[in-house]
Amino acid sequence: MQPIHSLVTEVEQAIATHEATKRMTVLRQITSLFIDHAPLLTDDHVAVYDEVIVRLAREIEFHARVELADRMADIPNAPLQTIRELALDEDIAVAGPVLRRSVRVSEDDLVTIAETRGPLHLRAVAAREDIGERVTDILVDRGDTDVHHIVAGNAAARLSENGFRKLAETAASDGTLLALLRQRGEDEATLSAIVEAASERAAQRLAETGITERGTAGLTEMLEGHAERLMARDSAVDLVGAIEAALSLAESVLAAKRLDEDYLIAQLQRGQVPEALAGLSLLSGAPPIIVARAFDAPQFDPLLFLVRSVRFNWPCFKAFLAAKSDRELPEALLRSAFSSFDELTVPTAQRVIRFVCARAKLEEESEVVAD
Figure 1 (spheres, rainbow, N blue to C red):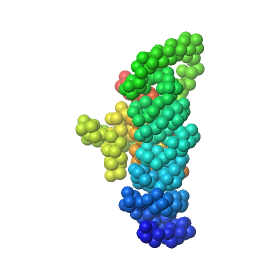
Figure 2: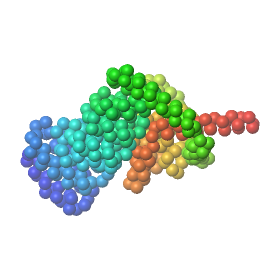
Figure 3: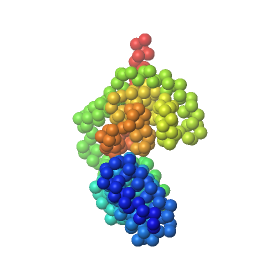
Figure 4: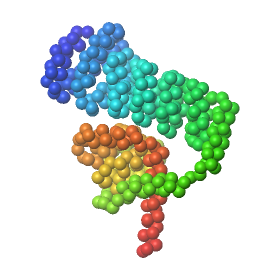
């Protein structure tokens, strides 16, 4: 234990000076020291590390907390208070790795997070191994479509009778959820009865109320609003040719089943933006001009719809934002982007992209006829 005691003075100095670089350097040293010796440490030794790491972690910047969470998430005897504070972090980039992977997050904390955090936190909790009925009941009550799918598809997620019933009722209008519930091996007769009853109730409500013209108009207005941003005329035309030239490479990567978010992130980090956008175009079904306009738009939300529509995660969207800005992203922008990413569901993003693509096709056909 001598190495960590020799760092205590340095820790105090790092905190006192408020130098971010110094704090991060010391934290990395201590974290590495802990990870190297973790299998041999007693609970008392871990507690010593915990106290030091927690103090430093409260004083470091956002990106450093993300790194710490990722390093600690897979350690079986990770410091408890450190893990707890990371898991309770409001930013999913910090909390996510711990919520998905760490065995040291208590059930009480998982309940708190499931009750108070947004969709991305709920999805991370839903993907954990071995989550109990207390947690899944809350996920079913508060979760969106993605959360329901993750819970139903997680064989290690235990469902209460009430939680199963609620998912089965939702499955009456969600074929993917129904298939996932059937794969769990639950009572098929019970599942079918619940789904049938829910379908009948939904049909009755539809017959009684119908779909109002106002509701339909509201949906159309929302989609058109997003479409305007995605199809805005701007300087993106110069980028279209580069994306089209990169499509053949993206198609070969897709054929090799390697066109995933890791591939896109790697391309962006190498500065191969057209190659990454070509991959996004293929995966989303959006033509190069739409993808180019989304990347070139002054706002980040057009790009968010594309990335979210193919179910890619925050790191991929963040990599596109970094490539788009070509500089270090301001903290305020990151937090705003996190919030938007957290709130946007995959079905909504997919609906917008389908609408945009259909509209683009109509405009193209109109131009051909006009010519």
